[in-house]
Length: 347
Image 1 (cartoon, rainbow, N blue to C red):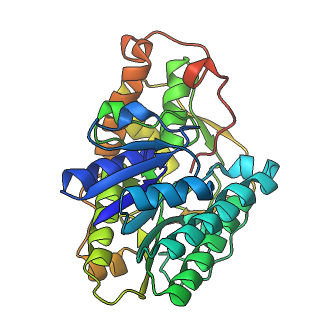
Image 2: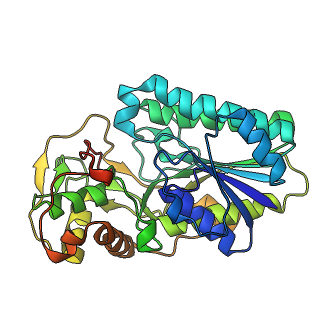
């Protein structure tokens, strides 16, 4: 089989592309490099620069590379931005997916793997989130992911395409320092950024009904997440009668509180600034932890890496791009390419 990976130069996408190519799968990447980094990909993985919403380009790529399966990762994914720019998110994440599925159906591609998100669940009040937990997203990003699942399943039924939707939880860490997350949008890089600037990490709310009062989340190493994509792609590739559908949570099934994570970051980095507690943010669930039972039963896959390995590998990648962090110096509040660091969510 030949797999087209959209968004394959991104943080998660590059890990997926490398894992699949390293396991002997034929891979081609389509990425508009708006947030992707081409250098994340080895020279033997073809990179086509362009949008997954460009039908003419899609038709050409699917035909020229004889694509037989698609892994769709390309999407806008910042919660706060989705609230400010809902039309942009629906255009990119839903309309773009519609165009891609039209091209896939027309080309006779019979396998489609959609990278969804735990954001489809919203803020359920349950100990473990199963695939049967009702979906009730609370922001446009989550809405676009849920609408994407509907589109993927409906297209699969109508056109005899085997489909899968992976609802992954909080990706962290890095397989190699050069593959690390370049954004400052999630809790671990957000902690690193504050510490590098000599500022105390922020915790949003410490009065939740959890053991230490801070939010509890399920963190998954991005290399484990990539392995899950590989396992599912192989499962779809072995399907002799395309047309089935799978929906799977991808997580460790273990919760870690924000305060526990802050303590681990302090231990790994050697920075002991005490976190400051700020007010709760609207929409933060007290607990969001996956049930990983179904993915284990369906794929025989289980996450192998723990939270310490996530933090240590993320720190190595951060220091590669911010040498002053390892040296103990402070740096200005800038993100990639010197851009100001935006407001970030801690989950």
